[in-house]
Image 1 (cartoon, each protein chain N blue to C red):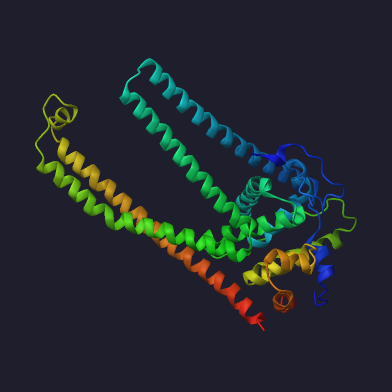
Image 2 (image 1 turned 120 degrees about the vertical axis):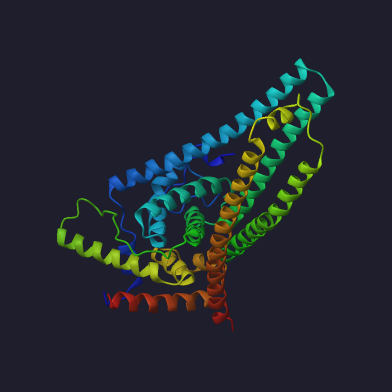
Length: 183
Length: 205
C-alpha cells in the first residue's frame, strides 16, 4: 500500500528527484517539498487556522497519491499538482470568501539587516496577498512560475497549449503588476 | 514594487522558512502520515476481527442461519470496503489530473450528493407515513413479545411518535442545510469551471 514508505534512496539533488519513478521516504519528501507545500497552501488560504487544515490535507493527499507516482514527470511537479488540486478543492468547500489575513510565516532568523528583513517580509506579504486576489486560472499559473517551473512543465501540468499558457500568464502578470503597484 | 521582474519575485516568493517553521511542517506531516497509517491498520484489524468472529460463531454454532448471517456480515464489510476503495481511486484521479478534470469530478460529486439528499428529503415523509399506517393497520403484537410488552408501557406510543417526528424534523433540517451548502459549493465550482473555459476559449485560434 505504501511503496513510498520503503525507504528507497532518493536521487541526488532533491528538487528534481523521482524522475525514474523511485520515491524517497515521506520524511525526505517533507524536508524537500514542505516549503513548496506550505507556500501553495498560503497562496490559497489566508486564514492561519484554515491554512493549517489545508496543509494537513495536502500532506495527506501527497501521502495517498505517492504510490500512484510513475515518474512520468518530476516529483516536484507531481507534488505541486496534488497540492494545487487539493487547495482548489479546499477553497471551493469554504462557504465564505477567502480572507486576506496577515502572513505569520517567519523568515530567516539570521538575516543580517533587520531593515532588509522587514522590506522582504513586506514585499513577500504583498506578493502573496496579490496572488490570492487573482482569478483561479491565473493564480495557478503565476504560482507555478514563481515556484520556478519551466513553461513547458506548466503547460504539461495544466494540459494547455503553449499559446494558452502565454495568454494566461500575460493576463496574470498584468493583474499582479497592477495590484502590486496600487498597494 | 514597480519593478516587475518575475525572476526576482520568484526569489522573494521562494524564501525558505526558518528552522522552527520547517520543524513545525515536519511535525505536521509526520503526524498526518502516522494517522493515515493507523487508519489503514484499523481497517485491516476490523476486517480480520469480523472474519474471526464469524468463523468462531460458525464453528461453535454450525447452523445454516449462522452461516448465512455471517456471510452477509462479511459481504457487507467487503462491499463497503470496495466502495471506499473506488471512491479513493476517483479522488486520487482528481488529485493527480488537471484542475479542470478535478473540477468536473467535484461538480459530479456534489450533484450526486444533492440528488441523494433531495431524494431522502422528499422520500422520507411518505415512507414514514406508510410505515406508520402499516403498523397501525396490523394486528397488535402479542403481550408476551418484546414489542407487545413495550406497547403496554403507559405513554409509549405518544413518546415513540414524538421521537419519530423529532427525528424526521432533525433529518429534514440537516438535509435542507446540506442542500443549501451543496448548491453554494456547486455554484462556486461552476463559476471556477467557467473561468477556466473562458481562459481556454480566449486562447483558441
